Image (cartoon, rainbow, N blue to C red; front, top):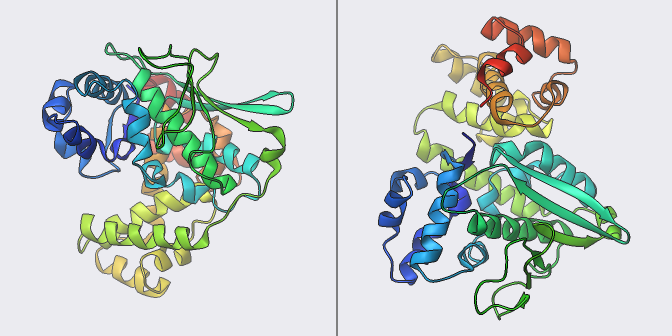
Length: 333
């Protein structure tokens, strides 16, 4: 079963309350619990999130519930994806990096760049099925995509039109506009947004202040989630830095607000080491990606910081007793 970070549904409870409904009751009806949404990095079943949004849209009598919810969110709903692409030079390179790392946020999602003459489609596909339907989940996902792309281009968060394959809800025209929602086009041939081809070559907007703020907020989050547990804090940071290609003990220590020698010393006092934590995180990420992701073995090896896929395969066999490909065949959903 595909999973998604519960942070994707940030502001859900507040929005449902404003419509006069009980969010906890809706979560229970979708097979979820309120506790699963307290930590935004908790993974929940993707089909159940789809069901939750459909139930909420019906109970709140809001056919654009997914879009409305997205308008209340910030880039934090995407977890580390904005940080992972912050160093890419162009918008095109940033989008390519996002597609490689989408599994960190949600498994079963793919972003395809489709050239259309002087325009280019950014089309989302979600390989998930829910008995309640998928319209609200796709609304939410496309709106989040638009917000993210707007941040790369440094333009207004409502500057892009949302294209949706779903038919127009009752009472909505093909282009539904309001003072708060972006432009919407229904009954389209794809789910996503459209850019000018030239915009792909635009410089990726790098907001250093926002990046530093993200890291500081994450440090506070680590200290509250793992109080006094330095090893767990370090594992979390390693997992976030590995996909950037900039994971090293110096950067991990800096993110934790200490010198690398202090980090090593404190880890050793508890029978741990940076090298051991790195191996644990690599194995965990490798198994998660092999089970749910769409990357090749070579791409995965590079993402985990290996210069050669043969070295990664040798390490993986040492961890599990079998090759990455054999492990994937046994554990793939």
